[in-house]
Image (cartoon, rainbow, N blue to C red; front, side, top):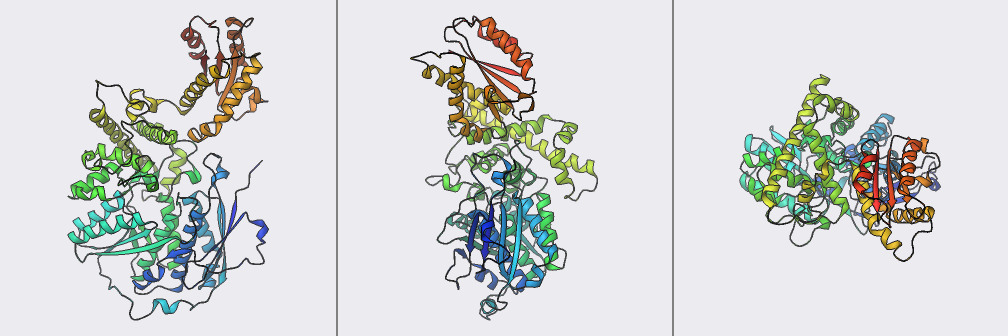
Length: 624
């Protein structure tokens, strides 16, 4: 049965529910207001100040800036669902925005609504974005924008407008233009928290010292007032960022702006089967960029281009570029972390999120680890125990994908990644498909080679042969080649480890009455841990064989069958039972046989396991 996505009604600019939209049809209703003239303001925004810093913005563009602010805020305010719930519908939402606008006739064009929906759907992975536009007060805020006292910048012919987050990529882009051209640079930033503001201001001030009178910094603040965010994946950030840059382009009659993001991040090939839709970032994916170009061009009635100059660079290349241009001293002032709330003390990075992991590998591959490791990370996963399984999964998935990129040939790459390549090739400026695939393959292969280089240096730096490896550290993961194991193998190992600890405790006083009793205990232990396993291995479904009514039609990856050796149940009976089960299920998926042998009836565990595992898609877990 299809599960309906949660639908959110978002009322903006004082809009009320139209009669055509009964409130009973919506799971959540949000009221959002960003203007300080309203008593109901719950979004803190400096839109007035931003508008005062540009020469002129039309009503249509002011509408768009408001709209982007509301979309971004609603995204943060509306939970995608628990991360324990891995199904697509749990992380896919439907939004319906009701917004008062000035340019009422334009926004009610069906083509514009469709382009808004297409761009937002793809970048977020959400199910749908609907819009109902109402007539607003056309001149309500005009006095805020047209006063003579407001600043007006005279645009220069050679001006480069680019997004500036304060991360390594945007910093490298700004440096490269300032260092290697005479262009003035307009940096466009979104400020969502005090830490981001400090980072951006610090970097911009340093650049202004080096390049006086060449930088203008447009800072747009958009955060909540009196309410708290519920989701921080911020998939709509690209829409907000891009809208601000587009508005500045329009104000100064410029038809292009730049987004500096490395290609591995932009293309963002999924590292697991579950990393699709809203779980994977598409904020700078080539298709996102093309959809935004089409939307903004329709709003402008002129062609607007968005460039990705770093599409063919890796994160390692970005750090190398900063170093080449002589700005190594700014690396530690940039912030890449997506979980700054999780850090402590003076650290600027948590050291555990994907962005921190990516940055650390790039620093070692580029030879800049001595700079990047100077106290910015709250946690060093290389030689410390990784107790958070989600963090471990992030690191293992990252390395596994990089190794696959390095080891695969271009034909296998084309075959394995075909569905994702289709979403890329159509939207990059390379007409020949095979040439495009080759270029994407070379980028990914280079990334894999750089990650391997980083791993070797990490080992050289931290692996002391005279001491044991720290349990659950990245050094141990490398030593055990855990990143080469398929996720299902790692899941089986975790299940076996859990059962080997729990089963002896469960039966330390009384042995199981029979195999059904043993199976019930196994079932209760695994059910208690199922949410944890789902979080750590969300792409794998598993079930106990006794609970699956029709094995031939089951959409599961791992079946778990319990066997109990006792009294009259000889090892030969267990052997015959396992052999029969392998044939009986015949579903093409993996079977884990949990064998409880408290009286040590099995003489040689390894021989018993090997005889089954070598020729069948199954695993044996023996517990005593």
